[in-house]
Image (cartoon, rainbow, N blue to C red):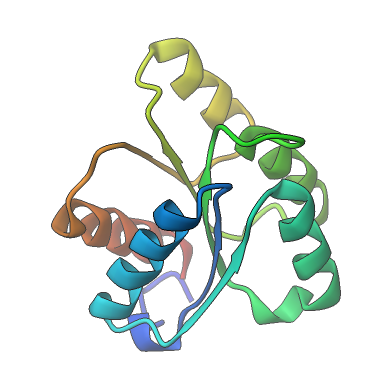
Length: 133
């Protein structure tokens, strides 16, 4: 289904961030874009538990890089052993080339640097959807 056939309204997104306000901001942006099913986790471990319990219920992940107990890139690496194809958008303040290379080598689908506007976020989501669905 790589023709972009999946609509934003069909998307089931898991937002992973240790900061409540950051999760709420991303959730609001997704809702404004027309995404109806948004779930959240406060860290990588909680995200893995959610995915284990509801594996078929998530088809897109938006994840912060810097989190305690399990970073976004650690979550990504673990997730790729189970599902190499689920779209994974890394959200980070890191812009250095080493971080970008690390994320790409870990299997990230997309990368967006904070701060970003709702328009930039939506554009990135749509690019990933075209590649993934």
